[in-house]
Image (cartoon, rainbow, N blue to C red):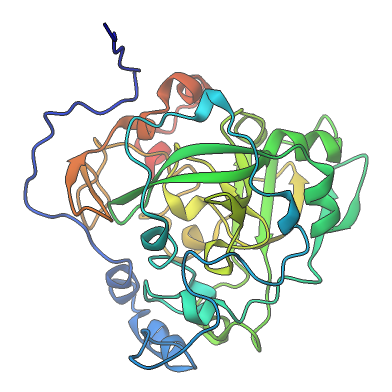
Length: 335
């Protein structure tokens, strides 16, 4: 007889389906007075995929033009092999993405193919003993890659389950040898307005910046993704390097990183610069704290349309709740 023991983060099967709460972040931009920015960015070569528009790459195809493709697939870390929910269909996950550098709509994958992933320099600097600039290929080959299957929860109240390939962020921290006074890790994406038409918008504070405390950055869950579904990371997912922090809302998982800076000053993130009352530094998933524009109590599974209850810390509380026991920041821990 098979005995099934549910883990603390697994969802009950009795979940009910209420009225939809999913909202697109374009509504936020509009509410901030930035709706025109999104419209302008989308008009500069972007837009939805049009009938008859052909691309050599299609969502789910092997990622072209990546010299590290021979490294995949990688072995699954058994500690992160069972997310308690089915893995999202690859084609769905690869064709429903946010990447504001290339526009504000969800069908961003065609425009994201303009991203040039090589050569790709990665700089490690700031309060470190070993400042350095590495080629992405050299960095990826230097790390021990593994696969982890994580839940992914967007602040817009939709969710996926994704098999990421990559390495623990703690391994990069170890490589950098941060000084004792470093308190935060600041991450920055590329800035190239010729390549990424969304960055031509003067209303948005490019480049995209995100940050973590050192305790968060060295937590075992924090992960640098270099691949997905057993293949190198596609451009629309943030090739060649992106952050994945599954207990936080998805906008914290910065894409296409070019710089890791260790600092004693708390970074001000991209969305925090736009509206710090709606998108704060912490951004930990909590169904009890609503976004000012919508509830966070439930989420829509994007490939099934099912609505399910959202779990605090996205179900990873056993691993991360202890990071915040000494922080007295109230609801802002979840914004």
